[in-house]
Length: 332
Image 1 (cartoon, one colour):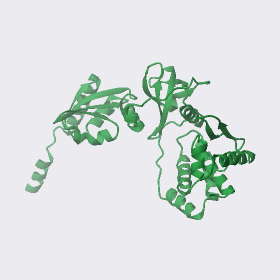
Image 2: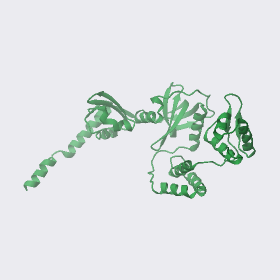
Image 3: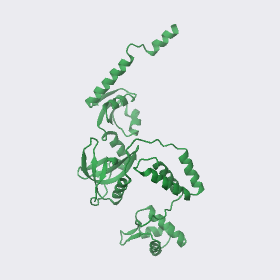
Image 4: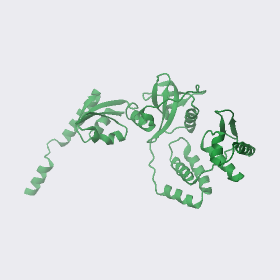
């Protein structure tokens, strides 16, 4: 059985790890009785830790917000993960977080054991982060969304669409996803009665929020990352194109891996749906497919592909092919 001081630290660590514990769960983890747990909770309260208790069958213990930040109890892997994460955050992505992350990292490195400090320094020294041009997000917006998702409370916010128009949305927040420098919110839009993906840099939360909600089952077999990839690859763009690719779908697996929608048509072709902000850019990208294709929709993309093909043809008109030029050189 753990000594009292060690047990209090372990209990505090458990309360920090999960939002809520039942008395029997804590007793099982620590190898003590539920009465001992109640006594230890009182000791933590006396030390200034606001441990809240909810009586009854569905009740439990949870660590509330206090006047000061309690010491965090991290194992080796958690400490390294936090330090590396702070180092990456110092490169941006969340508005105003760079300087704050550097200060927090400096404090953490002061108390890290030498064995962990060397690991963190090596990871930061031998990895390179390429800064992106994605818009930053105020940290209070992220915390508002996360808290609403955690507490299962509806989130009301003003949302600026791609075209610039603004609407008020009432959403049951499910998850935040960070993808290629941008933050996305996945949630159930109550008014539209469907799941939606929102760019968080276009979200402006309103207070107060809405009522609590029961969790719903996410489409895509619960794979939030795959759901966002599909949504961002098409619906978030100004233009969405459907292309018939004259190649079997299993040859296009690299496109599925980056979230594009590839639908098998027969053994020799497949349908590809791809999005973009301008049709000329989509036309150029399609040239890298490595297979023949036909543009089914929209007509503007077909015109862009035709313009591009004519430009390429003019670039090589009047010139002999590589084989002919090589042959002439040998004859000379």
